[in-house]
Length: 363
Ligand SMILES: [Mn+2]
Image 1 (cartoon, rainbow, N blue to C red):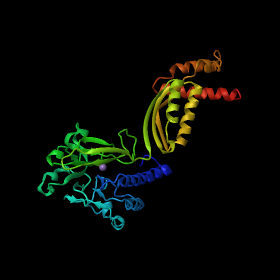
Image 2: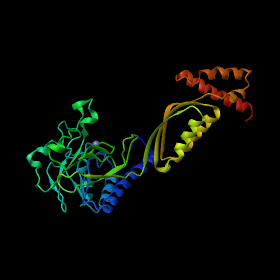
Image 3: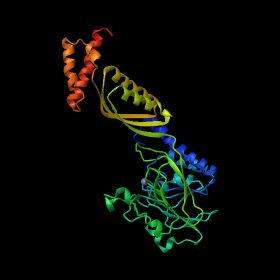
């Protein structure tokens, strides 16, 4: 959340809690047996007590049990762990079960046994799911075996091979006869196999187009059955990345339209990257667009090489074609559009030239 400063950052933090609240509502509405948090309930051990207290308060209103494992950001077993903190221990509601041991846990009221793969340190070189083929991971034959793990799948970092920490081999699903493997760490919703999914983070927190902001409702009829999944949007905010190449009035109009089509600007964050060349009037319109959207949106970050000024024939005409100003402007115009310092300097010089000529002209 460090990307968004000040009050707007605070708004985003509040939205994360609201997402947890929505999940609680959904759990009741859909009559699920329990909720799984596959790690990183908290994003750091240094999280403020205020956030711990508020998160636990929201979870205390869940009508069903919540089973959470520690992830790489909130690993357990160390004195500095958020889970060792007095505030957490004192305020942990009865619904929340922190599974920080590698042993099967039967869920009361349904025939599911959970097989947690907690992280007890930030990085492990041993696959955290490896214990699932041990005798200690055996369950009763009528039980639905649901494992919970936090880490990366081999495919994601195939070029780096074994150097990725907390690496999970999805072959464990068959090897350990799992009915489902609930995965955490990846921010987007992602299918690894029929029986292994990343739900993704319920509230996005970065500009990455990776399908985040969902919860998964998983229905498993009996041991061995293929799980039925329903992806439900849990996010309150939308994060967009947009790149724009702006070379004429149509390009500018398309960008204006894109912004005005955003359904909830106050809950929308946009990262805009742009480049291009526009005439004087259009460049002013573009500047206005950025200013007003920065005011309207929850957050607008824009960067890029900038849009350069290339005055139209009429705009050049207004400087007087035969005069000195006109001739300088014409020379500068020929350098604009060049993606180099020269092009950018020529564009800035032209903008200053227009400003000067207008203030002399008494506009
Ligand atoms: Mn993580």
